[in-house]
Structures are given as structure tokens and as C-alpha cells.
Image (cartoon, rainbow, N blue to C red; front, top):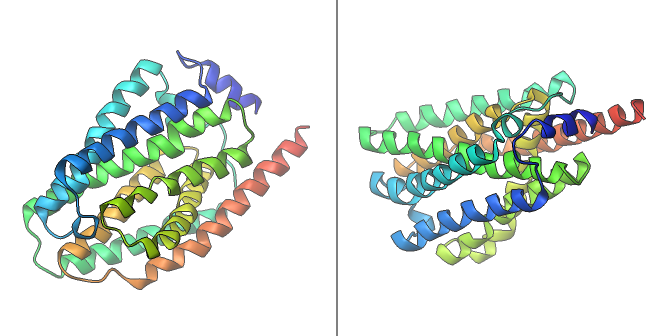
Length: 258
């Protein structure tokens, strides 16, 4: 924890749990306010370019604008984007490699159907929005805030739980209630995988890129009327193994340093 404390002290505003939670809630307020204003139908988000613009790109980009301003004022850019140390064995790189392969498969599958420039453009902007926004609030500013009071195990658990919890309101916008527990579980596992990616690479940039591309590849397949590759589910057991490895690595490192 010494390196984390030293890193936090370099910021212009001392990180706290409450600030991290406020940024999380602020982003969600903007996101869901946009959904309410544009009358989102969750099940039709990836249906066409107009829906992709209003229900995918706009809410995430508006939330990102808020985060850019907030993080700049707080002076947190370095500590939300970079860790001073890396954790985990090298085999954890199998997770980003597997994700990149599945993303490529899904993009190639979508490209086999006619794609308009408008649809592709809003998909790319949505990828930037969701990759930056959701990672910044859950694996970025929230983690920085949680680290001011908690050990890394609790930081992983709470940040991953809040990442999955932000999907619960989807039921208010058309997502089937019976499917919600499955979505919450899968997003918790995926969030844990993104946490592992940050810790083993030492930067939030890698999970940002993969998260954005992952979501956009899925939405593009929906837009062209194609089912995404079922091989995507293979990343979940890999993500579980990776986060366990990172947490064990952290625990052993703390034991060695007393």
C-alpha cells in the first residue's frame, strides 16, 4: 500500500471513497437521464444507426464529458490511468489475447453484412464513450477512491459489484427481468476481468480499449441481424482465473513486504 499512498499524494485533491462514489453516481445520473429523455428501448439499442447514436453513443459521451471535467479539476489523471506497480503472472495475458480474438471474429462477422458509414461511425463513438466512461468510473476513479481506505481485495470486490449493479436499471428500459440475474453475474465476472487487466498491465488504458471494442462488436452484430459468436462466453472462466491469480499475487507481495 505504500506505493499507492505515495501515488495518491501526488494528486492535487486527496482521493476519498466519497469522491469516487460521487463520480460514479454523477456519470450514471447523466447516462440514465439521457436514456429517459430519448425514451430508450434497451432491446433495440443496436438496431440501427439512429438508435446507436441516441442510446449508445450520446449517453456515454455526455457522461465522459462530465468525467473529463471532474478528473481534470481533481488532478487525478495519472492515478486513475496508471498504477505504480503491476500484479499477476504473465499467463494473464491470455485474457486480453482471447478478448482481442473474439472482438475480431465479431467485427468480421458484422462486416460480412452491409454496413453504413453512419452506423459504423456511431458504433466507434459509442466504443470510445463506453470504454472511457464505464472504465473511468469503475476501474478508474472508484478504485482510486476505494484505495484510500481499503485493501486491494475489497477494492476489487466493491468496484466489480458496482460495475455489475449499474446494469440493474436496464430492467426499467425493457430488459427482461428474468434475465437480469444472469446479466449481473456476467458483468461482475467481466468487471473482475477488466480489473485484472488493469493490475497486470499497470494501466487503465488496456481495459478501456478492450471494453469499448467488445461492446461495439456485439452491437454491430445486432444491427446487421447477426448473432455474435458464442465463443465469447469462453472469456468468463479465463477472467475468473485471472482475477484470482492477481489477488493471490497481491496477497503474497504484501506478505513478503510485511
